[in-house]
Image (cartoon, rainbow, N blue to C red; front, side, top):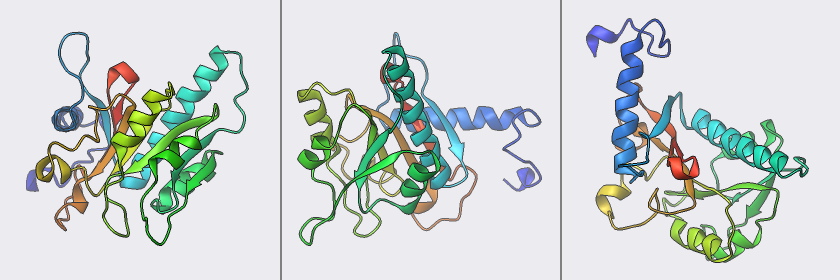
Amino acid sequence: MAESFSKNFIDYEEYPQSADIQNRCVNMIGRLFNAPTGEGHIAAVGTSCVGSSEAIMLAVLAMKRRWKNARKAAGKSTEHPNIVMSSAVQVCWEKAARYFEVDEKLVYCTPERYVIDPEETVALVDENTIGICCILGTTYTGEYEDVKAVNDLLVKKGLHTPIHVDAASGGFVAPFVVPDLEWDFRLERVASINVSGHKVDLSSSHTFRDLCCLAQPSFHKTVC
């Protein structure tokens, strides 16, 4: 690490080995999050980001672009896209929606519930919904939202709305503490995940501190 202090790992053309290191990290995290592998699947897709905010911006852009392309192909309007998320999301989700002109559909917390209600969440989905944000480790309480319940309701209702999991806090915890918990690419509608290395153990590592958009090819899935 000391030998690399003078290197700008963002400049992949100048330092191509840094891109190789990034891709190796993405593939390791892809396997950790159960991205599809084997025949017919390409390696995990993802990128390093400068903080969770950039990772989430990329995720929202990807969801909007995918939705817009599908609407155009169907000859439908691409106006008024929306995203469904908890009122307790990290502030960068609200910024992303406003920056990229996406309407916010919020699932509000209650005195008894600090995470999304899956039924209420899926009920907010319409033809203009670009995606749903589920949080694995909320800012205020650290709770995991029920990603599987949201996924199963979407499948049951025949909705192909993608889910993005904001796993900034829990992505490097859940696989080791509750490995049987289904929240990642094992779920059909989970399309992308962001995860932060610097939120795990109060470390100050910045080299690959955030990865966003690790995707399953079958659903254009991405890890950031």
